[in-house]
Image 1 (cartoon, rainbow, N blue to C red):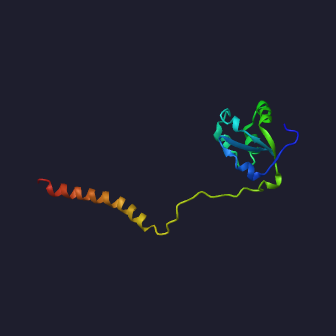
Image 2 (tube, one colour; image 1 turned 180 degrees about the vertical axis):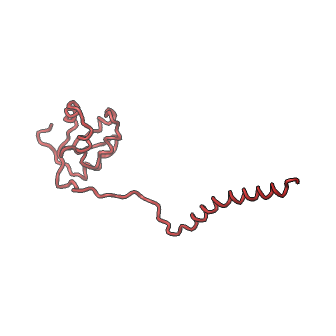
Image 3 (cartoon, rainbow, N blue to C red; image 1 turned 90 degrees about the horizontal axis):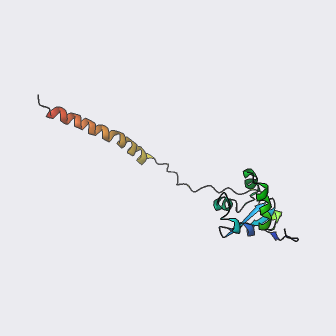
Length: 134
């Protein structure tokens, strides 16, 4: 590790969220894992999903080996400035289609889906009875 670690802001680290440029925050330390993306056993998607946040819990939940923890030293690039880390991430709800309060068209379609087959069946029954030779 470097003797005089560089202090990074959360916004600066969050900008590095691509396959060729990926930085992670683990236990208050910043790691540039870009060279490790292709070699990561879980794939690069796992590392990319941990960008833009403190990934300590994600890292610890997996239960990495001691050799994986030792390997992290070569990717260490500095410390995170704790005052720039947001206390809580703001939730952004997914985009949804607008609610349609007037559901009459859907109701009409459901009624027609039920009535049209009955009308066809009734018509077939009537035609069969009138064309049947006695």
